[in-house]
Length: 435
Picture 1 (spheres, rainbow, N blue to C red):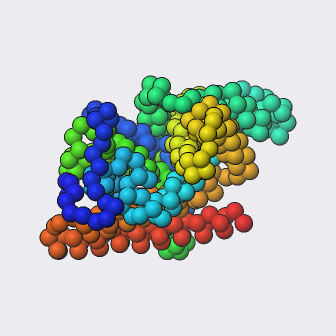
Picture 2 (cartoon, rainbow, N blue to C red; picture 1 turned 45 degrees about the horizontal axis):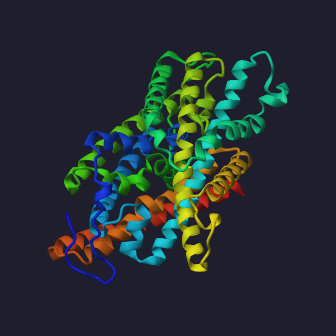
Picture 3 (cartoon, rainbow, N blue to C red; picture 1 turned 135 degrees about the vertical axis):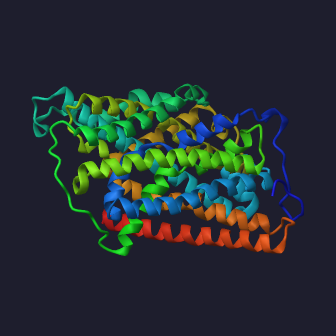
């Protein structure tokens, strides 16, 4: 499974150009995967534990999901070596055909759009709590207009997020890559410590053990898991940047990164749920008092981290739209500044449009759990469905033992079926919450 031999029309190995020689170390790949996964989903895990009916069922679903999450990363590395492509959508389009490739591009944009909405929603929540801290003597209902997140969030988007997102390249973001991981680790540590010390102003009560109200409620944790662990969109690019691209080596990297991620998410989910029980918020930081200095530091760190991650999601989504713009202009024979999507006019227009749409959606959807449900459903395509399809298509042209091929095809079909179930369940649940 390390290379591609055999043929199917339109499917042949395409080596990466020499100019793009891989230089990424194994440790660097682990941290990049970890940083890609640790994000706003961390805040939602305690609430997901509550919705699942307690610690035991939530951890069980998380561990079962971890098998598919790691499998998806390994499959994407294998598919990238077979197809020779360097992007997720390129791999899917090469192996599964142009129609599925177009579907992948559409899902890619929608998923990144909703992730950007979730980022802004998290930033808005933290701004609201910071204003409460800075204006302690003013009741929330009587706070001035400039303390309302309907003013502070658009202001921050215009003055900070938009300038960070406009540049053609976002290479400078590598200097802030460690911030997200540190903020996530600090948040998990604070939640664990606060459970034993007790949050200021919070009276802890003995709560009875919860049980899932129905078997379907256990599956409500799936959207949060998909949103929290999704690093699969960047998996192909990371794999192609590795110096050592053997499949066994990539599997080890995937296991280490997701196990570390699972540890941080589990600690946050368990101790956050045990601290607040049925009173836990969809954003765990919103459950803590607004005057706790330790929590204020956590909010500030996490807010800055999300501000620096938002331009990366925008850049990835904008690149897909630019490719579509370029193909459209080529078919129409367009020329001039508007025919070049990487030019300042088109790039600026797409950036402003992206920020405006996501900002409006973030202000319209007040509950983070509603956004998580939508993202979790779409993320199932990138974690389960597309990797499963790629595996089935790749092994169909690879020479291998019949029983091995049969097992791999069966696993690919199972991944597609599981992903379809999660997409349907998450989408229906999110629609019911909205309407």
